[in-house]
Image (cartoon, rainbow, N blue to C red; front, top):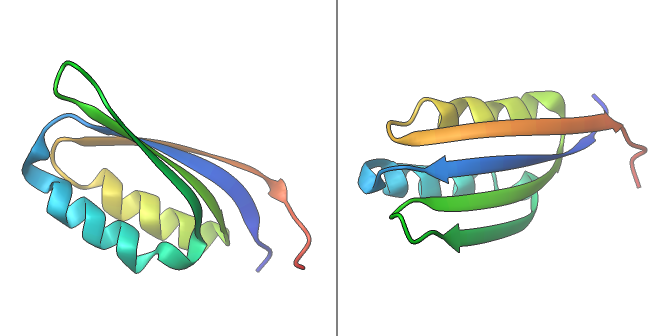
Length: 84
C-alpha cells in the first residue's frame, strides 16, 4: 500500500479521555512526523498531528481517537506520495 501525507486536528473538550488519547497516539508514533499542542483559555486543548502512513494506518489512529469521549477529530489526506 502506498503512503500518504495527512494531518489530524484533535479537539479535547474534556480531560476524561486524555490518558487514553496519549496511549493511542503513542501506539501510532511510527506514522506521526509532527505534533503540536495548544491549550486554550476556555479549558479545551487542540493537538495538531502531521502524519505519513498508509490509509489503513491513518484510519486506525483516527478511528480509535474518534471513539473517545470528549474528543473530536478531523483529518485530511493528500494524494499518494512516492516511497523514499
